[in-house]
Image (cartoon, helix red, strand yellow):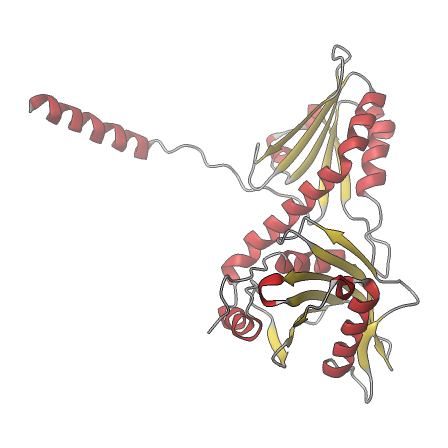
Length: 334
């Protein structure tokens, strides 16, 4: 009995000591939206082949934007300047050349120095070997950094979820989508919803609709755009009489590609430019179309931006993060 009491006292003392000496918390990551910090050992590495490979791939233009904007902004610092402040950056890629190695080593770490954080390090025996390793896996790196951006945005949006809109979406379309505050339902036509955010500097919109699924031809670009244009003409008017939203087919052609990176196993991702027939409004849009086989229907979720004379990539990325919160309930809402 005395032994049990002694052990209990020790346990209490241990717990009290643990509470009085909490473990240091992982700091929150920092960095601008769509930004990558490249860390090199020397300026020559950044100006040479490794830096050029990083800049040319992550700095390529994001398709579907009316003005040229890179997928990611890339900044550089030397590893000798990697202070605690820089270690908090959200997206990092590290260049290390070690002649003693026989082949390149690629490492990926999450939340190494901050949270959320994605750190990719490639160590190679030469600059040429480093570039070869980067080129072999760069598409996977892009997927990781894109995911990191979406997770950060949803960490920001989730506490401000608008449950009234979320509930209306679920009751109307039998899907779940996390929509943050600031949006309002502009139109609800049963199988079609238009949800808007209007502020002085820009407008953002979500367009959600479901329709019957017949066969794989329904997922072709021509069919996707035909259905899109018919619904936009019917439900989204422009600012002047007889004007309506449509898909631009001259300045930037819409492009649709299959992806297995969406929240479902398969989706068609479409990017392009919307415009208003009968007016001069235009902007980028992004959509995902998925097959809900249980109910033989197609679900399309779209985000669009209107921000004249302003960069639009980050506004569109915000909508992309929202679209990635799609959930298809096991059972339809009552």
